[in-house]
Length: 227
Image (cartoon, rainbow, N blue to C red; front, side, top):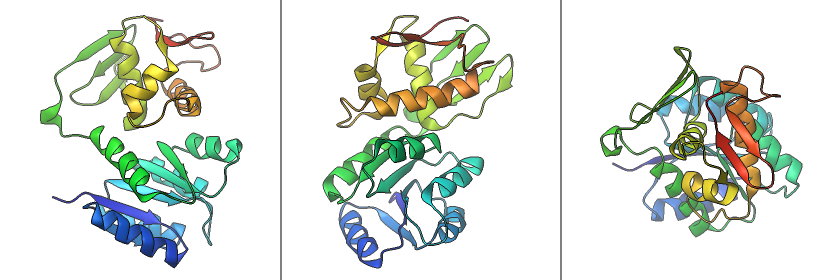
């Protein structure tokens, strides 16, 4: 079965080029020209969303936050902005990854494949379960509970937490987490790790400003401790 990619982009020329390129890579393409159309198209159950930040009715940040209220579908923001603040803001809004214009179709396809590898079917997952303090992770079910209450994590946040749990208290460097969680050509882009760590802390920590579980090892990376 072909994987569905929802492209939310107002420029018809860009939509046409990306549709043709990604169809050649074997994807089924869904298109939306506005943020409202993109949100409505979620009912078609895309596997990945490519979301432009510059849209005529709203910006991509708001669309991404709206998606995240109801869905864990992987989101890649597409932007002509190279300013670090805008990229971080997109990730803070809930995006899993980003690419900058002008787009290279092969690189974009590789990013999509990397995201889809993280959403492989349950039968492909080896059973793993971790208990760290009040946190309980079930990798097969992709669920995390704190004190018995299920937490709403995105797939990327869950994979990041699971990778930290596998380290059994050892420090994981940013490059290690980039390789294991994102998987394709991400070395050196520590923003992906740092932003998702901040988002993860907001969900698993009682006080994100003074984390008990996801602890920073200054100059080295992060580790997961019992709390």
